[in-house]
Length: 263
Ligand code: A2P
Image (tube, rainbow, N blue to C red; front, top):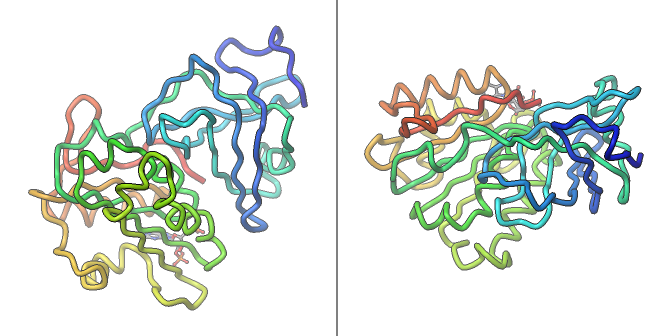
């Protein structure tokens, strides 16, 4: 899967895979080289994919690595009959992946007003942009506490985020801030120490009781939400009910929601 730069569309570059890890039968992450001209803000997404039948087949992927990283990390579901991921899941080190040239997105620190506590609420592969933000030094310069919630069906689906949370203290750039970071994983199908949908845990107050913090407060709390379309809508409604106002790049606010489609 080597691509000839001259036949590529102008909107993408061909990057070399440097690392692949399969977390479960349905989840994998990969790292690719980063073009020198590729600039993005932690939390943004980019189009990525493969050439299929002579045409680029691309979908939106959150960049899971932070803005300072020398490589680009992606975290992906494997859909067995999915046009892209049925192929991408077989990618190997040394092969090429297409990377769009224009990262963008709503899950950026610039879209949030200053606050004390940052909540990163995710389900499934929706944790990917937060894998970037939790490894971004600026996150800890702006907030006293950063809480990542990740909800999946089964314990094995949490392996990627658990690895990142466990490794944070050894991270060269943000290790010194690891004491500000709190990881709150839950499962909904497989029995585990902490169970329940994030929406249920917010509604019942169990989330706040568990963590020993006050419920969402527009004065101090900032929230980023990333998951399925229904999760986004349901979680957004609860955050709005707590009085938080949605922000954007143009007008920063108290919470932001992913606007790329995350599988
Ligand atoms: P559940 O098992 O109760 O459906 P999926 O694997 O379907 O993408 O879901 C990932 C996680 O998100 C699952 O734990 C799932 O819980 C949860 N989830 C699905 N829909 C919602 C929703 N509308 N609000 C909150 N969590 C959700």
